[in-house]
Length: 248
Image (cartoon, rainbow, N blue to C red; front, side, top):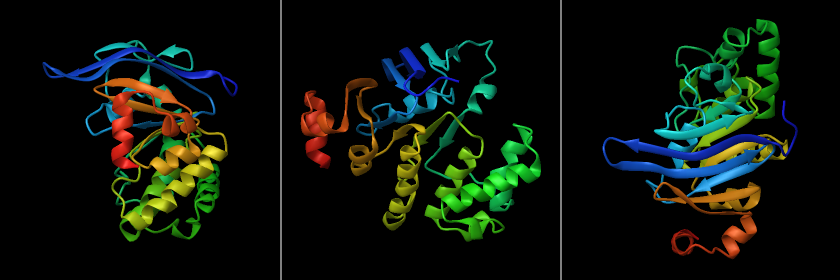
């Protein structure tokens, strides 16, 4: 295990080309340290989600290297599923199994993949449900929950695997406005607990308040990255200045 502040993910000259010409990622080089909350922002089509999904190889890069805990996970010989177990992923859509109860949704992977004892997995699931204020929903089905509740369950399901990093791909963009706050609150609590997080989002308030570093992407490149205060109050890149002037 790396200790706080050590490099958890290292990305070197990452490219992703779709088809013949769409260069979604164009030479990304960056690193994410343990305990950091890195928020990635930028206009639609800037490559943010492609970058995030590349970190656990849901998108396979066209070229470049990604090291996770010092292992080159882009190496074809590496068992990526083993490393994915340490990378929690939360999407826009919740991807819960509709025919399983909330408790079953949460305990499935720890029992099957981590070979956890079912009783132990259930105890941990109930602990996490309590943390997000949904312990009374343990035995209901996803269809009986609101969008915000489903997204909180999706976060819990990832946490049940005890990941070393959590990746969030626009986790609030499919939610009704009044449900956004409850999901962001859970994410803030996670950040405060020291969880390493990489978050693609349009929620600038969250970026300003919670991020240790904000990254601006445009045209498949990182154009600027800085502390939230510098990023929002003294943006240097012209494209970033234009982007912020439209959304703030």
